[in-house]
Length: 559
Image (cartoon, rainbow, N blue to C red; front, side, top):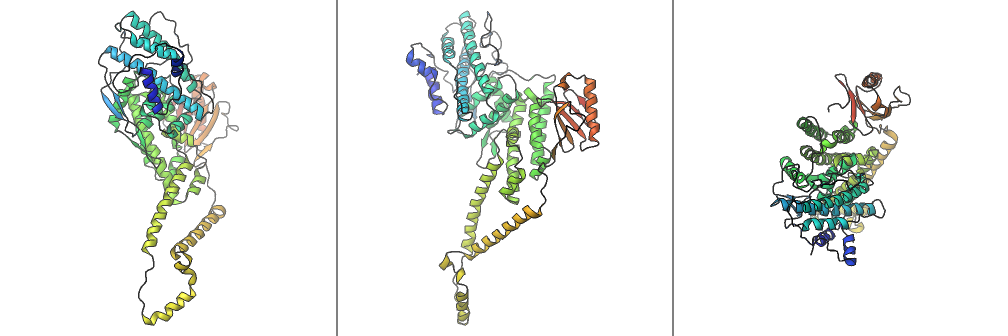
């Protein structure tokens, strides 16, 4: 069986493949595609592409780019150490091994690149078909697989002209394929990819998830791409539990080592570029830790809502941009996602136990589930959590009630002769409570009556006596129409003591003096209103100005 037949069988077993162009082509032509075998080590995914999706996939160049060749260093990171990852809490072990020589390295990377793109192709097609309800326009990958076969068949050394030409031809085909996938991916939202990955049965294999992670890691940066990578990498390194919570599969140091090995195995370049990487990376890691500590210290869910916590977490991820891909930051984000997601579930359950599911839903129905899901890297829908928790609680209550009934079941005690007449009189007067006659336990009946009365009382109190609290929970929208900044600000809101404003494009063309003047004007206007701090952002969600009583910054303020 050749390399592509092996791949097809594996994808079919993982519910990732139906019919492919290679199967159709093999029945109509005798072109030999894929006669070389994959490396014998376990299937590992690697990457080589960083092509802009909107440029021509075929570059006009007389010489190969050196993407696979030995003209430059094979990878931008050190070669990964041998390691085995047990991801997603399953029994599927992903192995990463050092290649035995340069030739094996390039063959493995080329084969893994084509295999990875094949997996991404079928995942995107499934999302388009199931969530966008449209017929997928699959890419014709025959030429890419043919180029791979030619590359693997080259007998010369890796520095020979024959090897370079085969490498260049393969690179052109894979770039074209990756560009086509990137264009299709732009039409797929983070939410659709998240729901498909969480709900498909059988679940996506670790290899398929790794293919998606490598694909998004090596695409040019954009916020949707970062959001998809955030979700995929978090799902890889955590295990979902039955109560909507998650469990990390590794400790912080071990997880960081695995991420570095994956980056090296994917041949991923350092996409983040900052003047002082170490300090900025450490600051981002500490910020994730502070956000996690803030969430875990909350006693009530209202504390997070009043501080607009989930929106702040989402905006912070946007603000660090491509620095998110630094291994240390990625590891900190994974841990933050899991722990904060668990806090959300626990606080909602605490609210439900204190009142009931219906009142909790009515109180927080205005919350945007998608914002919470993007912030935590997992689909968290309030109504689903309440429904499942309520069902589980009801089952536990029934079991507990059964135990009480057994313990308090009436027993027959011998009676004295002097009590005979009294006993007969009570049996005659209270026949309706006889459990043998009506099949009803009097304690269950009494409890039911009490619960009905309590429910009626709560209904009357909630609908006629209780004053409806403000649904904004400390977050209000600022009226720009009647303000002096309506020509400069697109959207504004007040959260706690902070004024958040999204600036119009005219902000970018203002001189810095005008920007400072506008910032001070907004800050001074807050003395008449409710804010003591001002945070201005551009249309991409990045902070462009900040002012408080102690400092004022215009440009890109430090967190």
